[in-house]
Image (cartoon, rainbow, N blue to C red):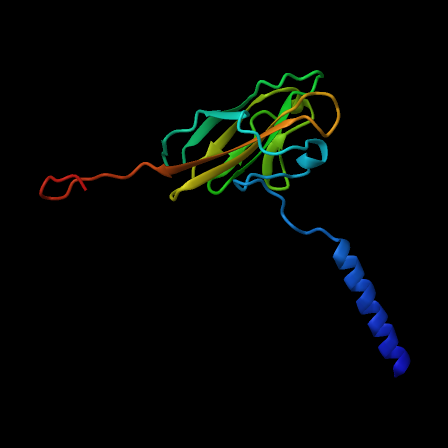
Length: 177
């Protein structure tokens, strides 16, 4: 019986040891934008000089409509090499659609750039709006300096929230409701 208890104790200790080295946490930036493994190649604090510009996204969306969206990273940081930047994006509602497979992909549930896409600072993708509810886009963008090291890149974050267009109708009294 003592041997069995010792064996169980050792198995528990080994299990706890293994669990202590596993990293199950979700990494993200201050706005909830995905970090993915980006911080393995890009270090540095969030930089307010990195601008993340989004075009094609309406102020209020039409439910179930498909939109083509462009995402652009602007920064004064000039890349010395072929790699220009990257991004990670999550959306709380609707569906992201990859329309440029060479430069964008879905990885770990996030929309992000491919290796070819890291040679750019501008990408396009599709988004199908949900039937209802506020939607939040959380974006992390990297302006890379292109020196193939994990330091010196600039990281920016942006959050955009949009709601559906309100349905309006008339009641019997002619008032808009």
